[in-house]
Length: 222
Image 1 (tube, rainbow, N blue to C red):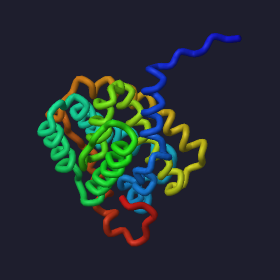
Image 2: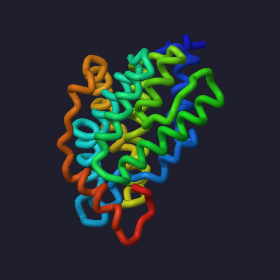
Image 3: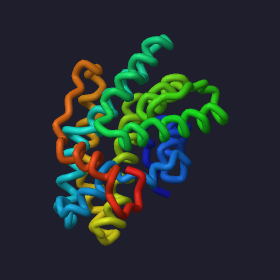
Image 4: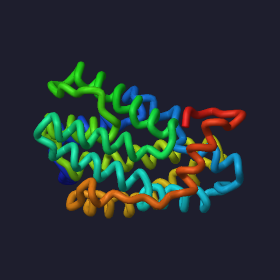
């Protein structure tokens, strides 16, 4: 019999993170497209290559990187006032009403459910802040939490793209697989950064989230 393949982290921690950041964890992620629905509507994203570029830009230059930094800061915050300041920063960074709703409502749902099941008393926090704070309270590894969070974020956008562009399942999964190396790099970088290092330049995605607020026909909440 072949030797078992070693797990990349403690098995119990890995399974907890897999549960938290699974599409089955009821934070409502499936109902948000992060502005992608407008990008498809106006013709900015029309195929697999366009979606791959859109996803990569959001991860590297937009809210993917910002969320990773915010999650790291929340993980390292040991005082309630420090955590509240990080959460206020996260809310201030939202470029549109819908993007604020997206992070606030997912964070609230995550905090409520997680506090009911695990010994992780969380308040009303934005999504990356809530995940980072909960991971610290349970002693889960920061790098693993970042990796699973970014992969879940990219996976949710991929699921939206499969429905909206539309993409085939194979094309969508290929785009998600292609983003793995970028996610891995962001995990490494975010651990040495602070909220002072946050800066985004995904103007098309930000504008798309604003335009989505008045889009006539919509499947998604953002």
